[in-house]
Length: 230
Length: 99
Image 1 (cartoon, each protein chain N blue to C red):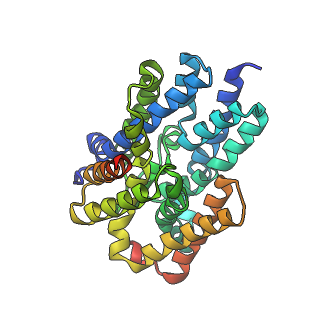
Image 2 (cartoon, each protein chain N blue to C red):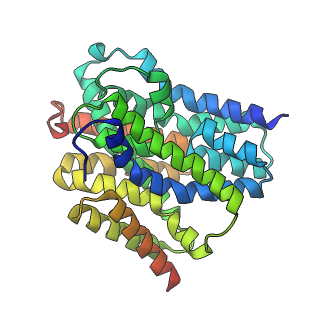
Image 3 (cartoon, rainbow over the protein chains, first blue to last red):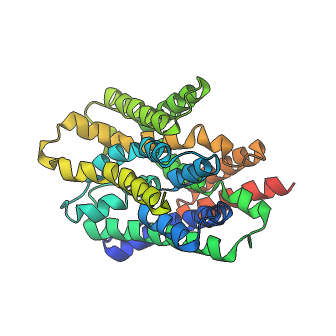
């Protein structure tokens, strides 16, 4: 179901899966932040200003371990370096690169996964709608998690840990099924990240960046003309 | 130290990598080779985000992860609907957890 018009509502609609997969994760974040004794304004500002799922969980974890602010900020930087590549990739697909300070803020793994795999050019209103609906899910879910506490049964919450991965799989499977090059690129990237993890490189942010670079280089090598991308 | 220093510091180091490419790149001047590299970046990113993190997504049960992954793949290839695929995958994983 892909709305043809590259409009703001079109972006909102294509972003619905992101909204729904963020909600449970954001609720969990709200819950954990409350457990880490953040107040409600701090918790909501966290999601509203940082808007980065993985780093927020890492930060809570480090806070609980008693880490200092500089250490947490450096870790966040490493975890988020991959967005350099994602933003650059989105940038090559956008029609008129305007409103960049806002569009840059909204680049997440999930909005990027949808925008990056969408054929053809992107428009500014479409991208904005796509990012906004995800943002609402993230900030709204955080507030919901903080306020309502643990209304979710444990078993459902455990199952929902799978939601973001389901989103990535559902976005990757159709193009990977059509193009062996795309499948190879994804598998090489995953193998690099996994391999470094097995070798004991604990910085997930660094591993992911290495995986993305290795995978995309493999794509450039297998397909120097870029035919598989059209 | 004030907690908001942490939030603002994190916001800054999250925002910079996201916005710098938009500000620093000139679309006309990007060489074709780099464009192809960036074109494959989404697929590489999804591969690197899925593996190995997916194995830890439900720490209680690896079979739940595997079953969820298989069902998500099947639905996404058949129905081509993201929301359905995600719901199907999460429900399958939850059902396996309940067994």
